[in-house]
Amino acid sequence: MLGKDMIHVLLVDSHELTRAGLRRILEECPAISRVTEVDSGEKALRSCRSKPPHIVVLDLCLPGLSVFEVTARLARIGPGAHVIVLAEHAKAPYPTRLLDAGARAYLTKDCPSRELLEAVEAVYRGQRFISAEAARQLALSILPGTAESPFDELSARELEVMLKLTEGKRIPDIASLLCLSPKTVATYKYRIYDKLGTRNDVDLVRMAMRYGLVESPGA
Image 1: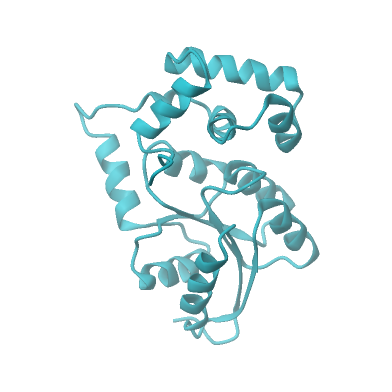
Image 2: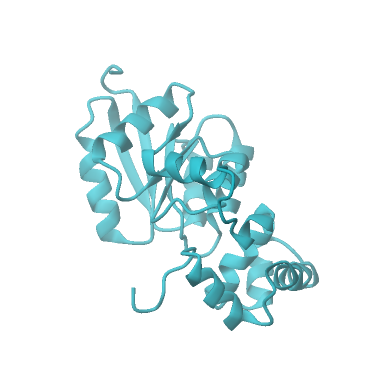
């Protein structure tokens, strides 16, 4: 266990109740001296520029900037803030792509509270951490004969665009969020269609739901 009054954690989640629950868990850890919270990736970036925390706990499904973009930008800000992604699931290719983007840990929201605290302390010490469920999914994904997800073919940037398309975002909106030109986003969009064999955004949403990457409206 680390000494007391050590770690500052920033929670980034759009749901107030989720943040409140996570805060209660984190504040029980003697090694954590401060927990702050924001509800978007944009606010997280501003907060980290003004007073960098040691750890940033990011929700996978953020409004506005995607978790991929926030993770990458935090890595460029400096070495101070290490990212832990907290997700509803560990379906491929999210864990691998986010770890490649600079995240230090990937956990699912159904993990035991002790696992979150272990991840915070491990990441603070400069280590990587993957939850038991995420590790299981990663192991299964590389077994011979395991069915591959078509989304494995998408690059990290294509996954970002795909997520925003499934949220109903228009090309100009996605371009503004990701600091890309509308033409570039349109190119990504039709490249995604081609790789996945989809014809439109409705097909894309249905496929993402089928593979568990986005929730159905009634979930």
